[in-house]
Length: 108
Picture 1 (cartoon, rainbow, N blue to C red):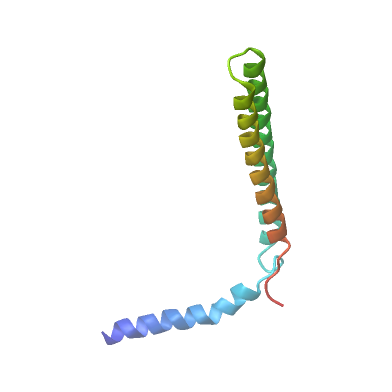
Picture 2: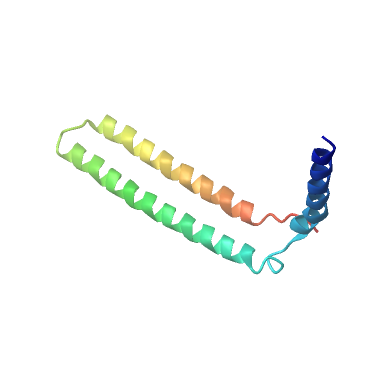
C-alpha cells in the first residue's frame, strides 16, 4: 500500500509541475501547433459549408421541380424550403460561434 501511495504522489507531483507549462504554452512554444490547428479547422469548416450549400441547392431545386411537375402542393414545397433554410441558418450560426470562439485567448 505504501508503494502505491508513493507512486501516486510522484505522478501527481510530476503532473502538477508540468501543468503550468501546458497552460501558459503559446503557439510558438508548441512549434506552431496553434496556427496549423486553426488553419486545419478553418479548412474543414469551409469544406463542410460548401458541401451543405451544394446539398441545400440541390434540395431546393428538387422541391421546385416537384412543385412545377404537380407532384407536391406549393404548401408542401414552402414547408420544405423553410426546413432547408433553417438548416442553412443553423450552419451559419455554428460558423459564427466557431469564428467567435477562435478569437478567444486564455492566459496572460
